[in-house]
Length: 142
Image 1: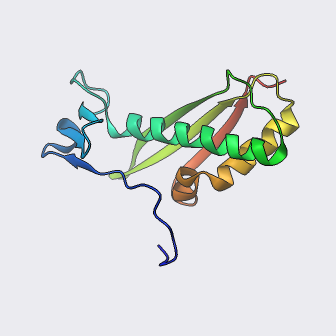
Image 2 (image 1 turned 60 degrees about the horizontal axis):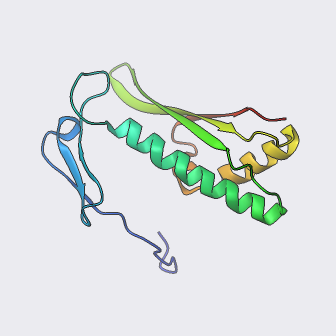
Image 3 (image 1 turned 90 degrees about the vertical axis):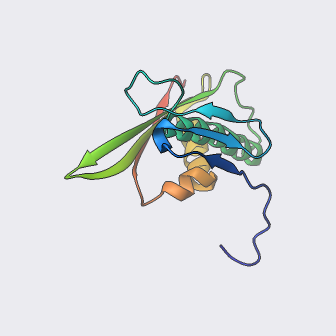
């Protein structure tokens, strides 16, 4: 991080021992969840679901910025379905992801421009670029 970066917000959480089978709580109490390992019947969510929710929400914000620059109205029913896979290869764990972007009523080439621009500006996309395999699919476009 550069010294000139202006911090807009800092999310703070405390996760208890147990990690994937523990609990997490934000410093303001707005997030207070039980965690469980993926694929188990345990109560709560898992880090992959939390990451998918955060990334898809951030990506929609980046789509809004891209649309604003191009003076394009986004459809009210736009959606991003994020899928984050926990993988293992030769004993090493990793992530891979797919973002399925639904921009109904937007012409395909314009939708692709919006998605490409959003992927360049979304902080989650920047954080994952070159670190995990990411596929972005356009669905439900004109």
